[in-house]
Amino acid sequence: MITEETKPLPESLTIPCYACEQRIANHVRRLIVGELTVQVCLCSLCMQMDTESLLNNTVGIEERVDIAAYRSIAGKVSSAF
Image (cartoon, rainbow, N blue to C red; front, side, top):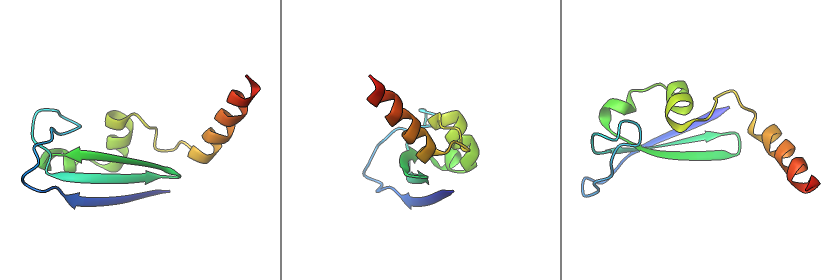
């Protein structure tokens, strides 16, 4: 399940948009995917991007990944070494 929160950024901040890197971000979008929290600063145009596209194409996280299962597998592999 994905939980999403969006808040406006203060106008005094001049952070580039994480998605397009061309415009100034004016919103922060927090996505909670399982146990993983991802926070990105986006411009108004990129804020219109749907959640699946943002995760898959911009952040690089497949939306359907089971984060808990991944952590369990990763923990078992790292403890084997």
